[in-house]
Image 1 (tube, helix red, strand yellow):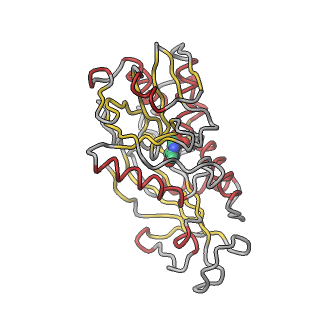
Image 2: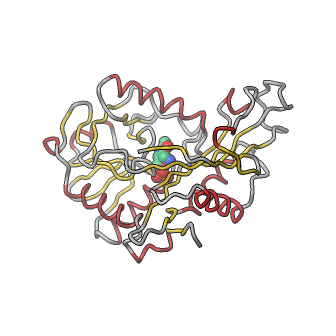
Length: 310
Ligand code: PMP
């Protein structure tokens, strides 16, 4: 379901995606000193392409960038315009994914492997690709990873730093080798944190429970969307509290939330079946209302959509 779009944005210019190259001495390539976002745009019923919660993603990008001293990024209105323009140029009447990446260049062009942030200039790349749903509606199997989520005191999960994703890659790989689709990661305290590229919810006695923002997790925009829709549209109680590892096995349901995975039910944890391996009612209801909302079928949340053609 993914294919690259022909044009991308690189350091102030629109270039052919195949020609968007950076030198090997780029600091971000050597030390993971880049930050990024993953944003989705959906085609509404009447054919219009809408970006979902664009400003919230740009705000998070700004916060991530501040931490790594990625200075001189275009201001938010300009960023918004670049993304909308790029989606328009790529002429897509398909659901799309947008990947802005702000990265540390080399200390001097083509020279220097210093790890200091001060004095290293900022690069900005944005690319888009056609991407529909890639997770199965009937759920996935997760393994609980032996790799712990990086603690906030070492590398804050709340910032979307590329280097942190080596931690996700280790966890994902071990899950894959166990025949699973994704990994659930615990934090240094042994409580549930998040999955490799998404946040996690469990259902207990008809209520949603999700780790708090202090659990060394990314402040997921989909997490926030799910909490809002569950409370305000489905009348569900949502509790943000620590979830000890063992509690995973007494959950009635479990699902992941993220821009990429959208809302995907988890039917097995460490080969232990939830709901006899089927998808629960609450996960199904959340998934449905989430997809309706991103596709512009929920008028109350029209303020979360930015039309590409505006
Ligand atoms: N946690 C991690 C580690 C992620 O990479 C993502 C994807 N951005 C999420 C959570 C979910 O965040 P969002 O809902 O904002 O996409």
